[in-house]
Structures are given as C-alpha cells and as structure tokens.
Amino acid sequence: MAASKDTAEATASHATLAALGRPPRILVFDSGIGGLSVAREIRAARPDAEIVYVADDAGFPYGDREEWDLIARIVDLARQLVIDHRPDVFVVACNTASTLVLPHLRAAVPAIFVGTVPAIKPAATTTRSKMISVLATPGTVKRDYTRALIDTYASHIEVTLVGSTKLARIAEDHLSGRPVDDMAIFAEIDPCFRRHGGRRTDRIVLGCTHYPFLLDHFRRLAPWEVEWIDPGPAIARRVVQLLGPASAGAKRGAGRAIFTSGRAPTAALATVLAGFGLEVAGEAPAVGLSRPRGVDHRQLRGPLGPRSHFTCSRGSPPNARREPVGAARRRGGRALENSGGRLGVRRKQRETAMSKRHSAKYKIDRRMGENIWGRGKSPVAKREYGPGQHGQRRKGKLSDFGVQLKAKQKLKGYYGNISEKQFKRTYQEAMRLKGDSSENLIGLLERRLDAVVYRSKFVPTVFAARQFINHGHVKVNGRRVNIASYQVKVGDVVEVKDASKQLALVLEAVQSGERDVPDYIEVDHNKMVAKFQRIPALGDVPYPVQMEPNLVIEFYSR
Image (cartoon, rainbow, N blue to C red):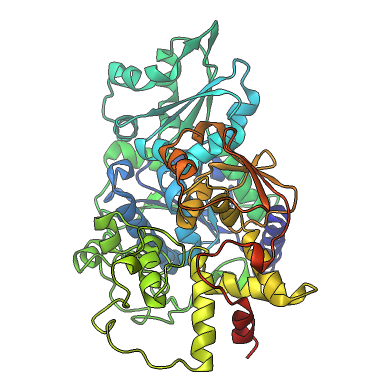
C-alpha cells in the first residue's frame, strides 16, 4: 500500500512539474550546517533544482532540548518556512528531528516531507561480522523510532548505540574554519569499535548529518578499517523518486542559505557555503523568516495539487505578525497547538507525566457511574457520583438518544477511548458483514490487537496495551506489529518479543488476579504466547459491566 502511494505521488509530481515547465524548489532543513552533506547529494542528483538551505542555528543543538520543546519549535518553523518559500519537497536533514517530529509535521503542515533516519537496514544487510555501531546524537539514540529500526532490521546482529554529545559541535567548528582536537574526536568514536569472540565491528552508521564532514578524521583515527555509512545518497534518491530526474542540458539551479539566528556566518563558512552553490540570505527573525514580497500566502506552490495548498482558515490572517515560539510557550505552554491541536500535548500533562488517555480513563468511569473495567483502582469505588462541581446533583431521566449515546461512549471508552472516527469505521464494517450487526461489532472490537494483548493478560490495562504495541513489544505470527487497531484473525499467534518478557509491567499483569483470560484466547504465560481461537459473541466477552451494542447500532443508524 505504501509503495503504491509513493508511486502515485511521484507520478503526480512529474506531471505537475512538467506542466509548470520549471525546476523544483527543494528546502533542506537542519539544526545547523550538518545538513549541507545532504544538500550536496541532492545537488549532485538534481543539479537544476533551486535549493533553499535553512539552518536553525538559533535552536542548535537539538540533542539538548526536551522533546515537547523540540516538537513545538520545529512544527512552528516548518509551517512558516512552507508559507515563505513554497517548496516542492521539504527535506528534514536531521536525524534527531526526523525520528521525533516527522509524524507531527505531516499532520500539521501541508507539504511533502522527506526525513533522515539512521541507515540501520543497509548496515545490517551488508555486515560480515554481524557487529555494527550507530554513531548519533543522544536524542537519536534514545528515540523509540531508532529502537524500532533495530528490532525490525537488525535483531539478528549485535548493535552498539553510541550517543555523542560533542561531535556535532566539532563538525560546526570544522566547517567554520576553527581548529578541532583529534583526541576529542577519538574519545567520541572509540566506543563504536567493539571486539567479541574473534569478531569486530565492520560497519558504523552515521546517525547525524554533521558527521560526514568529519569522515577524514574518523578514517584517520579509527583503530581499524570500517565502512562508514552516510544516509545522504539514499535521501537524494528519494527526492529524485518524488520529483523525477533532471532534464538533459538543464542549467544549474540557484541556492541560498538562511540562518534563523540572523547572524552572519564566518568568512570560512561563507566560503564553504559558496562551494555548495549557496548564497547567504539577509538577516531573518528567529521564527518568522524573511518573506518574499508579492506572494499570496494563502496558497502554496507544490507538485501534488490540493495536498500542497495551504489555507489560513484559523487564527490570524496570513500577513499578520507571527509570535516567536518562545513567547507562545511563555504564555501558558500552548506552543504545541497546530491545526486544531492535533499534537494533543498539554503543559499539565508534561508536568504530571500522565498521558491524556490515562486521565480520561478515570473521568469516563465517574461520568458513567460504573467501573467499566472492573478495576480496584477505579474512583467509582470511593465516589459514586460524577466528576466536577455538579457531579452530586440529581440526575434526570435520559432520553432515548441519551441512552444510546451513553451505551456508545461506554463501549468506545472500554477499548481505550478510541477515536470517534475509528469507532464509526468499525460500526460501518459491522454493518457490512453478514449476520447480527451488534454481534459483528463486538467481534471486530475483540479482534483489535490491543484488545487481544489486554485479554491475554500481558498488560494490566487496555491503555497500557496500546502503548505496549506502539513501542514494538508485540509480534503477530513472528512479525513485529506496532498498530494497536490491527485486526487479528482466527488462528493468529500473538506473542511478546523475547527482550520484553521480563518487563515489570508484563510480570505484574500475568500475576494479577483481577481478571481471567477468556476461553476464545489460548495463552501460555511461560512463553508469553497467545493464540486467537475464535471470534467471540457478546455473551463470551467478560465485560465487568453490561454492554449494549444494539443501542450503539441504533445510535449510528438514526
């Protein structure tokens, strides 16, 4: 499905660009000047392209920032950059940013994004010693995305993760013409070189776009010869796949560099930029970068038609002065809002380290007046009245609509408070299937992977099941699946991966006497393996409270 989507995008891009009769505009974004290594490869692949290089030196280095702060900053910057420069492709030439922010960017900003992630797959495929290292920033090393890449492509080999706190700054100094210390570089790369049982590391993945500029130093200081894997060429190939190759005899495209701090580069760095074909633009404010005159900001240029158009339907008009992200954050921690708040991150949640869904769980229990999961921790056991200052008031009789709505909210909330859109799609699928629609609805909900993991007692709650799956701890028929709504089929085997079987969360759930495993799931808790035996009927599902799927069907069928 993903491949066909990519092919469709590429085809649409080719057609549109041909109709426009112009070279593409490619925006390359990085925290500093390390992304020049990616820009160099893109320039070699598409020499005719106009390249806009944006260095967020005002926020450098990204590895030292909190995740919520980084998401807020990059999303805000990207939105402004797309309005200002209207790129056909937006390349995030930073591993730290890509492994964290790409999903948020794609949800919030109307542009085609190409990310940069550690090249673990090619390293794992080509290694002979079965020992590789990933040299990256601490932020990239600790990301769940990086761990997922290792679990998917390199679970059969030994992988050493090395988080360097200094190399990015050293690379910046090197490109700016300042001297660098060989001993400092060696101290950062030395942990990458491992020996074990007569084998030794033979591949090192460069997990930061700054590092290719230090390759000469790496090769000279390395204890033995290894292959250093640079992701730049792969990114360039992806850009060409989306935009198509350059036409024969095309002229070299223009290029400019923008620094978000507004500071002028050193003479040495200006020379380096000129060597990349980039002219330094004038000073720009930290977030709202310099806007070209005479541009209608309500509509962005892009190769894919409607997807690449932006309409200022909310908030201030397009020409209004934009507030720096820091100011927005100081005004109550609302810097993460975008397009209706799709990031869903709030200051209160950060301070309490409590997820949105976790807090909602107790609220729905009290609102329904029932312990819908049958847990001893439910606040209904202490307070039978609803939440808020009006919770103790006498409740009036519900209308037919109110009864149906309550049944829908209770069933939807039981399965981890899944989104309304997803729940309605499940109802539509239940109506499409033959037989009793209410029974079909229950069967589809119980086939969700998070429901099966929860029923198998691998985790204590359905909320924990969703997180457990998203973090890559679960396999279905021997393959890792990280989609909580994945539909399990009869006969499918669901198991906890080996590295996660001794987690405290799992052991606690297995030993809990709070609930039993239903008979339509066969579980071996010694091996942490479950088999989905059959699709259950309503009467087979061990709901702690009465569920009324027939009322849910009536609610949606009004």
